View 1 (cartoon, rainbow, N blue to C red):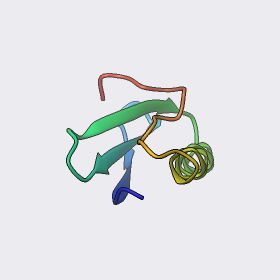
View 2: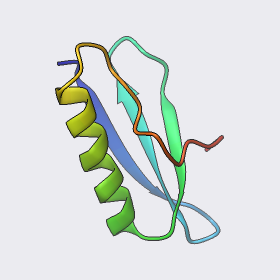
View 3: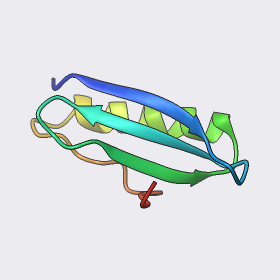
View 4: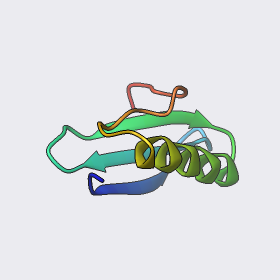
Amino acid sequence: MIETTYRIVRREDDTFAVEVLRFGALPQMAAGFATEAAVMGWIAQDKRLNASSPTPTLAARKWGKG
């Protein structure tokens, strides 16, 4: 499994985003979450998808420019 770090960011418009750092890949930002709980759910989904896949995948929602 590829080492992944998640950092939750509160944005100026009071929404939340999560910065995703995967070993050997460029940083990515998933944005547009209304609550921190929604971010935590997205992170859990991303972890499940990556645990069951030989290559890293991205949870299929909320990718923005950050």
